[in-house]
Image: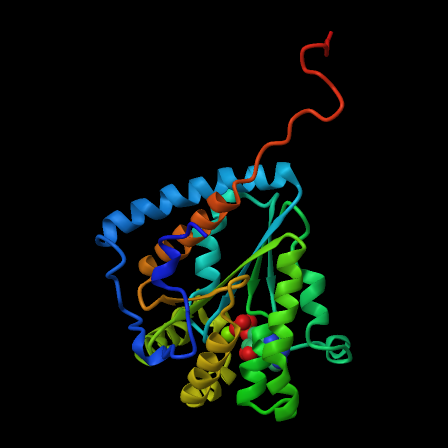
Length: 271
Ligand code: AMP
Ligand code: MG
């Protein structure tokens, strides 16, 4: 697969250690200004590729965004996909499951939200919550959680075999950066709506969350649905990395405008 940039962030092999990824690493970029210019260029390229994907109407792209509170999932959607406009892009946030959702298997709500042909689907959180928060807070039996990694791999393989390309990103921030961002949420009236006192309980479980992330990243980074760990303490490295990987992936998919179906432009007369 021709994804040279993605390789810098891809999780490969069972030896992967999350602690070795520096959330402030910017070595993949030639400085902030160049990266910002690159984001704008890549977002425009994504817009054009998205138009072709939509016109082609045969395949879809699923972008999974995971990360602890304040890791910048919404900001990523805005920076990378705003140029696309609302026609061919669908964002689905996954919250605490509703009663109806809890009455089904954990993949039920996820499968329903998967992008139809021609669409770029973005998951803000995802089925991975079912091996992250659910594991950390012991919301399901350990044996059930243990089975999920392989169930998820099989589910993603099925999606991939049926025309959905999958990219998964963990937005990796440091505990210090989360503290800064939480403080802003508490004091900035335009951000207070994002603060949930429950986030502080999650913050106390930081190490457990990181361990759960590492397990999920190691066990569910596959050829058909690779995980990428993105240094996300700085918004520009986060946006630049994700925009470039998405662009490369769409270029590799190479969607094409379909030719006229059953008619000849030379013979059509419009009076
Ligand atoms: P937010 O993304 O900040 O709006 O918060 C959504 C909340 O829903 C987070 O605290 C998630 O951990 C929680 N959540 C998402 N999926 C699940 C799930 N399957 N089980 C339990 N909690 C979940
Ligand atoms: Mg939150």
